[in-house]
Length: 71
Image: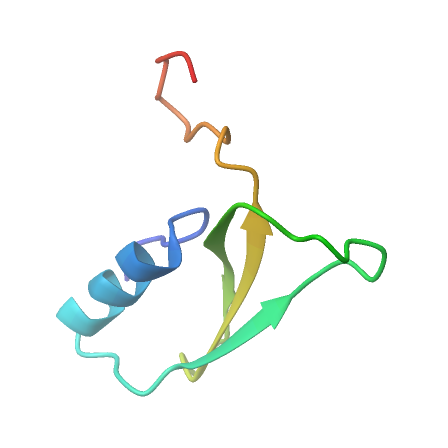
């Protein structure tokens, strides 16, 4: 299984689908004080049985490991 942690939601779902995982329930988490959540939904955790994917919003300026470009 490819690690999807940190990927945008669409990319994570695409990888899961390409590996035959379908029908994943998306659970979106937002910090209680963050009423104005902005940014990109990114994969945080996939359940062990691959039935639930926890996602959170992160600012679009988040850099992935190995990405040395400026934002």
